[in-house]
Image 1: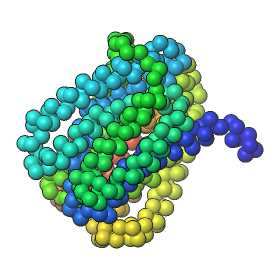
Image 2: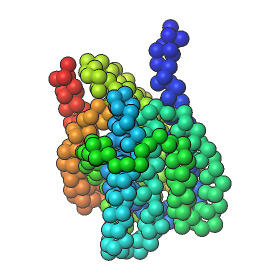
Image 3: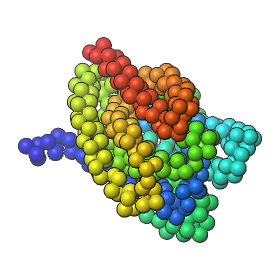
Image 4: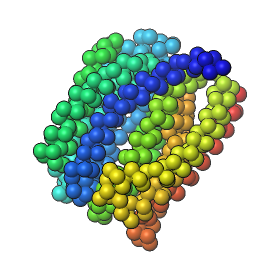
Length: 417
């Protein structure tokens, strides 16, 4: 029976293993930088590091604006329907990213000083990431769409292992600046390695491909922006009101949870090409059946995840980061358990099924409305509850957003059957 189940899901299992190794190579090094910063920097500098990264990732979101995710979707489709269009994806998507990067960088250089004040200089150190991260994500989307998880994994592991050699030295010797430079170096090396590993593309403009990817990316990009407003705007608000030490503890908890969520992100990325293929072939009933199974499975997993993190995570923090094991930690930790248990379910379903079947537009308007709602609610609760009110606003927004989005998606798919 087990042998039959294995062969039935052999491709998914193998892709999961390779994707896990790839995530370990790519995300492992960024998490290593984070851990070294938590250990070597004073909490205030660690808070600055996370605040600046939040700002830069907001800028990166505009530079990418859904291009990498749309690329993965269309690569999977073109690989089945049109090989010539497939070869046009990299160059045309790259042009869009380059154009957005130039615009965002100029705006940051010209106006960043007025908003960021003394934090402005740290953002300038990370400006290369505005191009490098979207481009590595673009290549990642191409490799995933082609199901080349093995090659992607090997490249990421080699780059990750090589990067270990300079990360510790830079952070130890140069502190906060060294940590920022480490990010740039790692993504630059990863970009070069991914570029060398994929050469099947045309250096010519294809307006049709650019239009298709750009249109879907725009829809998904707006959705991501809205999602940022109700999931990551909290760091920017905390930084704006100078809750720097609180950011340090909050981001330590966030990053630990995000590492724990990696397997669920991998599952979503692995099944996405299959759902994109099924949708292109109009197998709507099969998609609906799979969706019900995934929903039940991940709700159960989310409950188990909440219990285990409640019991185990505080012990790990006490051992590894004793200077953060304070009443402030537990004040932030308890609402985060609920937030990230919801993410267990959402992480796999949204990227793996909703986006890959072309329904990112469902996320767009909902995320924008919820983002505005979260921003207003955060400012209101900040006045009544202090900094913790911002975290509770994020929790409330996650619950509302998940319920509305998934109920709507279920109804849309059911109508197609």
